[in-house]
Image 1: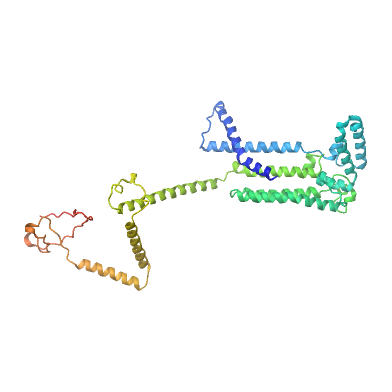
Image 2: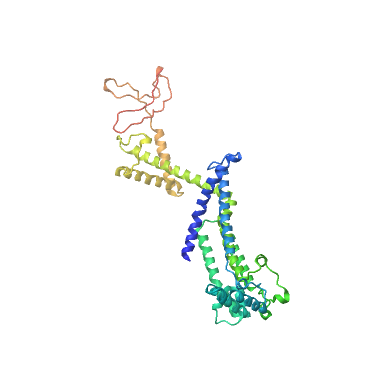
Length: 425
């Protein structure tokens, strides 16, 4: 049983998609014959065609399984005897006599012995009103319940026997709900389960088709009140309650699979699809940002390493720094530590921040108060160092504002100096 359940689960996971792809190979070439262009994969029209084809394949197979299971259901004792489920005891005796005249082994030979024995067992069971009551609800298994004698005992034992099916079904629903994705179909599967459970109990507790007034103390007597027939009684008048229950199990399986496989295809969650697209875009942007951050990090690591042929390359040919220098790591760690301390000091509202701000103001004041000197390029005759230009030294000895010092950038181990040019009039 477990093997068949696993096999069915695997089959329903892959076979419908494969069958849909094969069906599309037949459907798509038919479009040009009707003067229409076949939809291309990846377009909304193709997605819609795929959903409809998938739904048709699954529903077609489910309908075939349902009809085939209904037609192949084993006949009940009434059908074997060729009488109606409403027949009384005299009608049963008459039907068995006629059957024995036609199909007795003395007439048809040894090949008819098995059929005759089955029919005789059916007749013996249906002669007993109590066994007949239980048979109508729980099927041929009641013939094995030899220790039971009253209708209540048969009913109690039959209900306990049917509990196993419902426990297995409930566990299966819980497992499928846990394994599958979040889907509103799960809720409707549980609703469907409880609806069919109530229907099964109704058929088991429904009055017997046979007119047996001895059950009136425990059940509603149809001969007195006239029990109204149900839909399945109308569709299958020769069947009894246990066959209707088996058919309900098949319908429940049909509708459960239809809800699981077909409903999401026919009624897709557009909002959920849009959310999935947004999440995919966010995931792509996050991956791109991760790559960019990695490039920036390794570019900085390359730039602070000593100039070598391997570190002075273009960004497109740059390789990640898998093993940075120990000195570089120590320098970065020290700078990061200083940045953290500075950030903490900025956030602090206590005396430490006040001291830090006063120190900054003091250094700025000292920097502004110190005289700025402008070095005159080329004034290095006789080996003397360049002399600074005072505030009053200019052409004509006129006071002039002191120019700002030129920005300089000194490379390590290099004599190159970048300075702003100064023009003299």
